Length: 211
Image 1: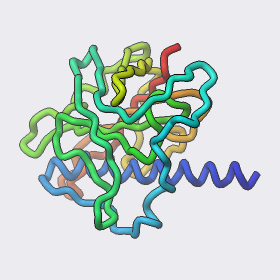
Image 2: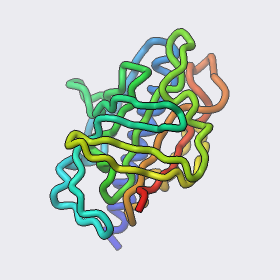
Image 3: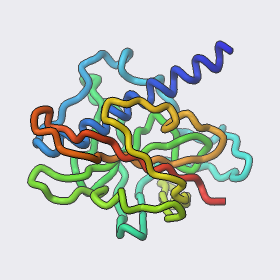
Image 4: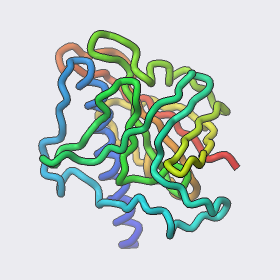
């Protein structure tokens, strides 16, 4: 019971961290300012998780995947570089600076391995130019997503569903599933709030590794 409680808490902390990333992606680029969490690293970040997947046990896929380097979504004509998002020297969380690149939270699950990996991308730029995930909401169940890793290995995922959450919502299902290999893509959605310089919602695309 204690182990399950600790696991749930870890997933909740991880989701909170990615929600902050999503807020930065939505608000920071639009106003040309990158702000980060004000809490101390120990309070704001989930426990570090090694990206070495050599010890990961997978029921259906024994491939040892490494850090992702490219995200490809043929339907959206996306072939984007993947940045590893960690923390800055001041303890703040880093985000992609290029609106045509995406960011993978490197302390989370590596795409292709058991668990729920998360990649976030910009919706729009400072001058209103389209971000890499401007058309993410047009994906449909059954669409394919591919992730190429640093060993030139490709993991293919199939979109299962798309959900929209309020910007301050903390749904656990973004990170909790660890029954198989999942990939979740996050970007902004909804109306722009000119007062808080932020979009009202977050769009999450849930995808499962193809068999």
